[in-house]
Image 1 (cartoon, helix red, strand yellow):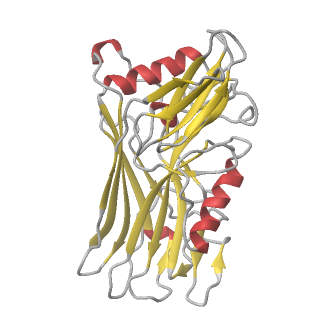
Image 2 (image 1 turned 45 degrees about the horizontal axis):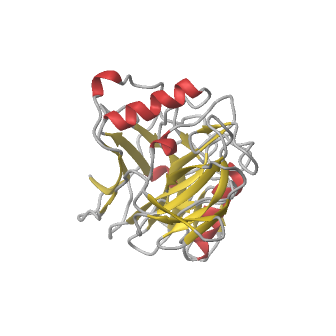
Length: 328
């Protein structure tokens, strides 16, 4: 029996720090966008019968964390766009009901969620429209297609294994045996019918599902957020690897890999003759969300999105302004 797999890695680089001072934060459970079934986790994926290897694509996307108010809308949009022919190209989220493709970059703030206080991008009590969210985290969209072109692929044939390079703190396995289809875990039949309910054993020519690996759940306090940041930064180049698998009896396995890199945000500031400030991304192949505040400590407010070489112009409202750039 062969395993058809695609491995995808996400790497966050924040520079080298002493690992001795950092302690591993608390890790929360993983989340699948399916309704649990009676036998969830008790069976191995069933075998795929027939010739031809399935093709699997794994795409990392940034979404609101469950149970954020906007998570369902963003997750539904991911599936709808994938079914319609392609995901959006935006790499930043300026509305919590939206999503973004990771575009080779994630940050420590995308690995932590809150179970109590509202939090977004590593900041507690965020301003509107993010004031009812519990985190801005990385999800994996798994898109599997039958190698035969027939209805012989089902959700319960899939398995997603996640591993992290910090002793596997965020490692885990998501299987779908005993689960049900939902609006965020669907099968598409050869005749175009989309299956969004019923048991995960129903077969189609294509299966799409959103999966979230275990994440740090320290986002409810500033101390917890600081601990996550310290831990991730202490690892040097932090990485997550997703391996999506179809278990079958095919003679040939299909596989591909993608490495996603991160780094320290960098922006350039230029004062304008009219008293305004022009902010430009220092790394032109990255996207940043820019926040500003007039005081420290203070309330960080959304100031704009930096994509490539575009500039965001900020009008000064105080004699001093502070800025924070969050890499996407």
